[in-house]
Length: 351
Image 1: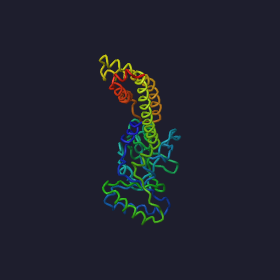
Image 2 (image 1 turned 90 degrees about the vertical axis):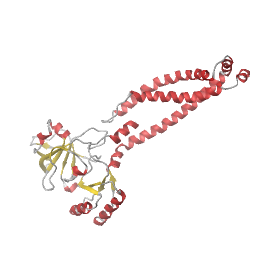
Image 3 (image 1 turned 45 degrees about the horizontal axis):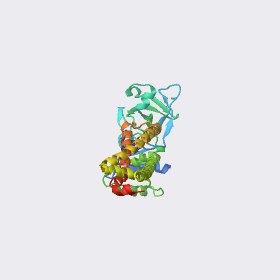
Image 4 (image 1 turned 180 degrees about the vertical axis):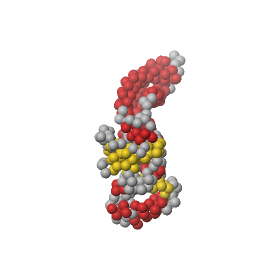
């Protein structure tokens, strides 16, 4: 589970998520008239590198899903694409590369579409260039042509696979402002942004979230589950050690005279510890043979819920078995060593 969570944290998503802050943008008609003014004011801040107004970040859980009519086809696609609405600064702000064609024109009155590589494949085309300049209709009123093909990126959680994506312009639903920051003195930059925001929108609360934090929340439940499992695993190991120590103490008390005789006959403390430990290692081995397949089956089933997953490597089970043996040896040997160091005369006198 820890490896899977680390995998989600480190795998590239196909866009830039570092030092990007998303700010909730008002959706009323007055706010739309002030959009260009806000852009100019924010662009004047030296640590604000790029600004994009859009309906949401590249990876989001509140996506729109749509079918489209492509190239005057008689019917819409039978599969759904994630549809995002954004200005011409979107792909540069989030560093989404193009593999064919060009970006939007800045003119908001002209309908143009950017599509992902997976969208192209879903249409049945082999090469991105084949869809360029083709007409496409979205929701009836949005009619335009495909001007560019984006490299695939993860538009949802990494628990899902790559999904077809469409991006087009539609100013009325730009309820998010994405700001790419330089990364230097971020608190001061955010304070300056908030000052401008409150001056332009005095009746709206300034709310923001960093994109990397937003993406991390996709896996909040899995992280909490992982923490719970680690906590209960620690308790289980502690209780197991207590049980092992108690059993070793009981066996040492039952075999105290045997230990004394062995010592009188020349047995070393090391030999007695090995004798004790060997019996427990058999029990540990049986426990491992029962537990490892069950743990493997459970982890395999858990991983099937993720399209992007780590491999269930053999060394994880080997490491688990080795750690179990070392913990058991440390627990049992400590008690066996005390018994081995006891005075054999006193042991032989014991009732």
